[in-house]
Amino acid sequence: MKILIINGPNLNMLGLREPEIYGKQSYSSLCELIDESCRELGVEHEIFQSNHEGVIVDKIQDAYGKFDGIVINPAAYTHTSVAILDALKAVSIPTVEVHISDINSRDEFRKHSYISLAAIKTVMGLGFNGYKIAIEHLYELLK
Ligand code: DQA
Image (cartoon, rainbow, N blue to C red):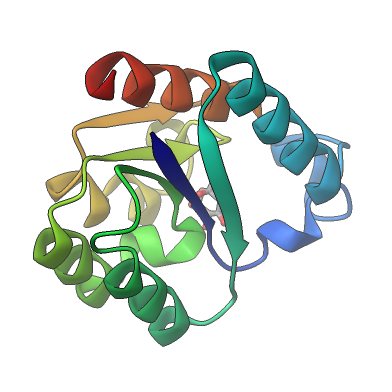
């Protein structure tokens, strides 16, 4: 079983970025938690981060035939990107959407997610632990 974890724009700035919302831990500590969660389950994985919408679309297209599941935090593209939604629909790889914060209790514009239309599940508001829950959910579905 192989899972692709995709992180969108500004998530590489975790730790520095709005710590009152996203916490004080860095992006590399998030990657460590993801590595550990996958190791515990014996799941192969790749972590990918990009600040560019088209690069994320390319990565999703390239995942076809290579990955069994996707965990994606599209960050700001959650609320704007029909292109990422269409890429996920095109490859039909089971996808879990993750948000570190609770997007339903923040700005009005964050309440709408295009990505939810292609996701089998959305995990939000659980901090970094949401990634672990998303990976476990995919594992249970795919095993
Ligand atoms: C986010 C929520 C988005 O609204 C925001 O643009 C992000 C991060 C989250 O993980 O809580 O960059 O996806």
